[in-house]
Image 1 (cartoon, helix red, strand yellow):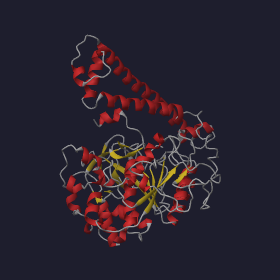
Image 2: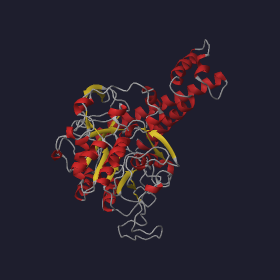
Image 3: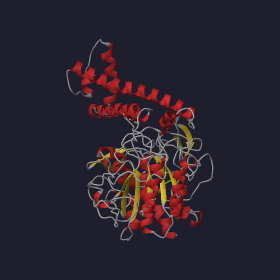
Image 4: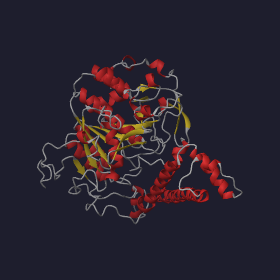
Length: 528
């Protein structure tokens, strides 16, 4: 899973349908006034931050999707139909207090009788299917290519990248372990298990190491508590250990516990019905994604989902590492065949040996009128230059279907920093942007937390798509895609984009040049 990278302490502290007619006639604020909105300078309150993606750019001066406004002014008292949203991800905690009432139940399957009642090829698939079985950790695709040897396609490029990434992971591990040692040394010096900014500022010493630690933690503790710092740094160490032990290790084989041949698309009898996965904690990513779409609105628990008439179908196909093309292709087909009208895929990679399997699945979804939404990726790359898989177009070729959306991520502030610094972009290959920084949603074991990534932007759009398909069910997947793109708020302000944070015009970093707006989308859908 390459689309969502953990942003540990280094990042935390560094940030410390053309036929629809004229769009300008269907938006809540005249287009010509949008770029004149005054930038919000005050810090968001906790309540605002928890739902900033639902707020309105005009009213609240943050680049949200106007979800709250849509419910208040367009959907109040309006009846809709339930829509099944397939979440192809790391697993979903279907027992979460804020999700259990919106989990899809297969009406044709008798639970736990050991039979394939609906004859779809999957035994007891009551809430979805787990294509990973008990597998959790996996290699990156580039590691698998290197493991195959010099005769493999893309070997030279993969080998160079593997060597570079292993070097970076080793360096990162050492750096984070150094942070932990610095904290330990200062605890010993102060003779305290915990210390505050005031404790650090009070240090007077002639020892160079002590003074270096004092300077470092003076900066750190002015932004976060020691407990938060320690938690994030330990998370960083774990992240780099996972990379070295699993993701970037050619000798590791995470697939052997699954029991299939991942290079045979016809070998389909594998996996199980445990859509959470073997460990609920490992379903963090998928549970968060599901919550963004569908956590129950207005129940006083955690945050609110974008859509209010949905059922979440869990398709576990994304490990801690890169997903297999076979699992994604079969996962998409499973969701399509079992009634999903919207599918979210918050994952991705930069090598794809069997990309044609996934593209065939996307065409199949298009034939069955299913909208598929993918995250653009978190490497600040220009996708017009670099291929990111999966997508509906590679190497500048025409799109293979009209049912796929690629989503970039927005930051919380309407300013030059409006584009999340990690977000991939592309005038041709990213369709639209949506909120993806500091998104509050469900995590396993009845918890909630902020996560960030294009992984969070994609389900925000999936939620809007589900809203449209709920209240205007006669619209096709292709029409919903066009509505989302054309009804978005068009912006031409200067922003920073890419790994080098270069100056860019927001209108030029995606195909639409827009940010998703649920109010406008529903208004446009009503005119259809």
